[in-house]
Length: 249
Ligand code: PEP
Image (cartoon, rainbow, N blue to C red; front, side, top):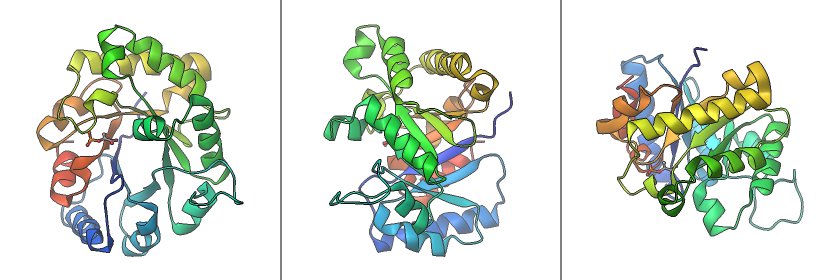
């Protein structure tokens, strides 16, 4: 099935008000060089979403959060609900990023609950999965990714409300990437898992590759079968780099 790609940028804990100039610059580039090959999204820190939303009105750049709580509201100091992200102008939220799995001990079950919360708020859940370096060395990549998918997907997943991001942990922020063959193997495995679980609905769920994507390697990675776009960290912080990735489509 032909699936419209998505290229999403994850700013992580980077970005002050001054960084919004990069969004203006990206919006201008997309206006000057109309681009309709993929959906485009930026996930800035939650503090910037409302301002980014105002700035991006009329552009084709969607916005996402980087995490959400499972509850709609309540006594959860420091947390942000999916409803609050939606209220600020987000269209989506990343859940289960490996940095949250590692730094906050997030489990597959919690991630499934967060993805369900995203759906409840009308947001697309971008659910991240991926093996560590040791797991790849031990030859258990597919088993790990299968287990994460099995545990992290809530009920009711379809191509409109969910995106899967395959992000090998050892490739994030390291400049390393898997071989093209390895990327294809994991993406085909994820597609197989989705169709087995969801039937036809599994065909339309986008599967993004993430891990050290940059303008110089994007064309090769984005052309891999079953790679329906990218989740980009470091290279999403500068409009020129992010646009350079989009321009490879
Ligand atoms: C990420 O954090 O989701 C990511 C893919 O980071 P980077 O592109 O910097 O490897």
